[in-house]
Amino acid sequence: WQCVEQPIGKLLFRRFLEGEPGLAAAGALWAELEELERCEEAERSAMAAAIRQRFFVPGGAQHCGFLSADATA
Image 1: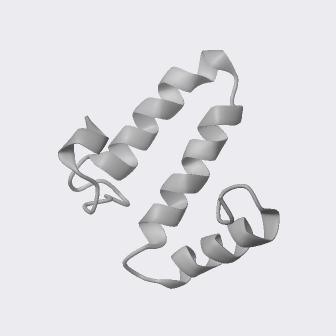
Image 2: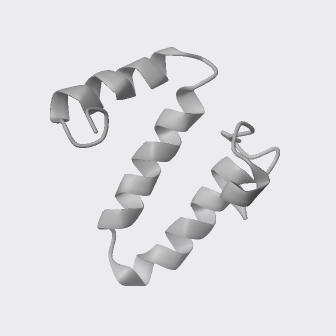
Image 3: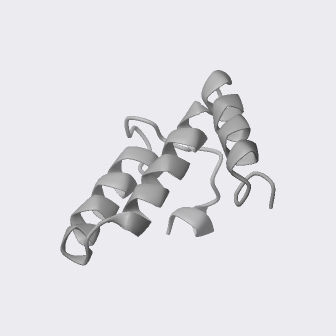
């Protein structure tokens, strides 16, 4: 709740993620998912595909290997 809904908690948690090498991709993924929620419906499919390539595909630019196979399906 504090990290998602409270502005200062969200900011501090994001900075924590960005500062930890193993968690930086998680912070970037979070930012991209929030952007996906705000984008126009017409752009959503292309943006979702780009997120999938970048974060969920092994070898992607910021692959989030800590996610389970169910989470990335």
